[in-house]
Length: 134
Length: 134
DNA sequence: ACACTTTTTTAGAATCATTATAAACTAAAA
DNA sequence: TTTTAGTTTATAATGATTCTAAAAAAGTGT
Image 1 (cartoon, chains in turn red, cyan, orange, brown):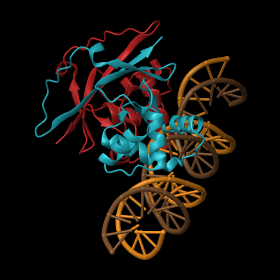
Image 2: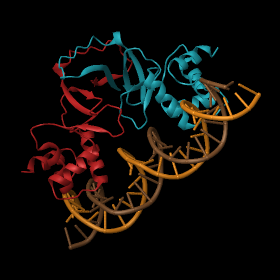
Image 3: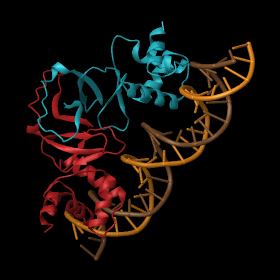
């Protein structure tokens, strides 16, 4: 059952360790994608598995996964960094009162056409953050 | 010459102190708007005036100004918080290599139409971040 | 001016997310 | 198996930001 993650990790040049497989299980073994902070993830791991993984490892792994494109960082100003298991092109609402993120599919936002060009640079991503108030 | 800032501060319920007027001078007394971190601002203040202002005061003041709408926070994931003296509706490029922000006027980005609605919430702002790579 | 209240400034301490360190461990390769 | 390179871990270090409480300044009324 973990075979797909073993493959996935190997193909990325990451050794499939017990810890990384556990983290894969918590992150990717659900129908629904979700947003999380490192702290959220640590709690979730502890709850779902009865196996403690060091915080440093969680940080390392999340960053490794992000670098490989298995996770995305959400650009937002909060004290903690938010990540998203939804790696498709999409955007976010941020409910300021609840401090909660909500997905906005690409199609929920009209097509975005960036007219300005910067010499020698190309666009890597276009991210929209919509802040919500009551 | 500082009269306009004295007014401005008073109208916001902020006492026009020597420190706040200095900070106004550094932030707003230029034709061009700019992006800055608290650290940047502290250096700029020290350079332009020969008057040291405590870091705590700079933090307080910048946050007070942001709350009053004289500054905007830029949503981006970096270890330091970025602010903008340009408070018009606009967006940003973020050059990943140089770690530098570049303004994108509202008109440089096609009109954005958010189709999804959240019950009982209204949109406060729509911000676009365009990441650039080489 | 003077006394009094409220706000502000400040140095320094505290907090807290994140990153670095270096030793113990594990997986892969020879 | 032995060796090598990559990982995990507890703990320390870092660094941005916030808190604290005392001193200073600003505003108000007399």
